[in-house]
Length: 111
Image (cartoon, one colour):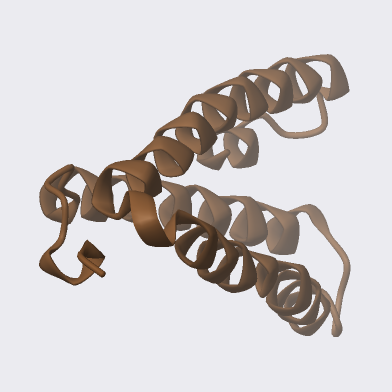
């Protein structure tokens, strides 16, 4: 996602990078869904709904941030900032998951 900001206006390269980004995102979704099952098989529905609720906030926050950034002028520099920010958020989320995620069943799983 961050690499898109360095491409410029070459739409065919941007489309390829978007496809690659979404393919990698598909790998991420599979890991998140299975991790909830590992943490607590008894409460996996609740965990998945909380994860989805937090993830859905991006649909509210991203358009607001994008609108704020491009409000004064809508040029390539502002869109580069948006894509760099998206890439940073993806990378930061992945790093946090790598270092802090666990597959051990949690003690609160017991009924």
